[in-house]
Structure formats: C-alpha cells, structure tokens
Length: 205
Image 1 (cartoon, rainbow, N blue to C red):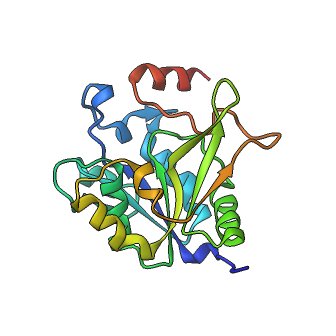
Image 2: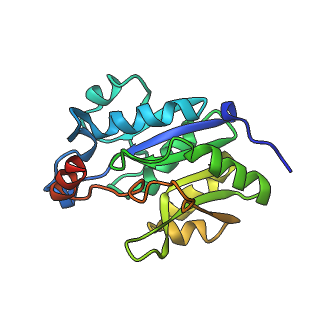
C-alpha cells in the first residue's frame, strides 16, 4: 500500500465563486465568529497539509493578507469550483492537492488524514467525502476531495470542452468515497453557508 505523507499534500481553499445565492457578495469574506469564512477554512486546513493556497477572483489583496498565495482562475467566465481546482493544480508543487470550500468552517481536523488513508488503501486517483444528510443518507461532498496532481491535464481538457459538473469529471477517474459518519463525527461538519440565512444559523449554533 503506498503511503501518502502530509508534506506531499497541498491544501486549496476555494473562495473564487460569485456568491450568487448571497446576493453577489464575496462569500469567503463574510464573517463567522468575528473572522472571514475563508480565514477560518485556511486556519483549519493549514495544520493538515504541507502548504496552502487560496482560490479567489475578487479582493485578492484581502485574501493575500491571510498568509497564503492567492490564485485567480485561469479559465475565463466564472467556470465554477473546477476552475479553482485547475488553478490549484497548475500551481501545486506536491503529488497531491486537497480542496475545501470557504463556506464550511467546521470541517474535521482529521479530514486530510482520513482522505489520504483511503486514497492510499484503494490506490485511488481521487478520495471524496461522503457525509450523512438530515435523513442519515450519505451524500457526496465533491468539493471536499484529495486528488493526484497528475490529473491537471485531464481537468484542463474537461473545462476546455465546457464541462462544469464536478461529479461528471471525477467519474472519469478512480475515485474512492470516504464516509464521515463515525461515532463522534460532527453531523454539521460539512454544512455550507450558501445564503446569509445559512450563515446566521451556523453562527447561532
């Protein structure tokens, strides 16, 4: 079984979206417990990886102040999270890249360890989170994934052909699904804040 070391993984915080469901505001800069959402994500991810990057397309100077290199999309037209992933892969200097969205500040502190363990055991190209919904059904969380840096060219071709759906691209590659439903796992760990109301509910918790 191949071993994946933490230093072989670069972390990427995805904060490059348009925030359309938040009225067009920059989602990653909305505050949670007094600090921007993207900063929470970066601070939670940094101890789990060898290096970190931020995908952003607005307010680049503010994001740069968080202490990690900031990468605008290299694909034009706000092509969705996969465009941010491609920018990360193009900059990644390690064999693996792990991605997290900016709007889920409670993701697990052992996220990367569990993804890398599953990827190594299955010799997979991609390890993706699945977590229980409100009914207890495991659902894919495609923006929480660990992927081989060698997938860069595949993703570039997919985006060049106007592909946008993460699931359609990951289906082309050997993907292992990693359940986060152990006793003690936070059921809200992967809750995201698509709207300002979502953010208010998360803050209230």
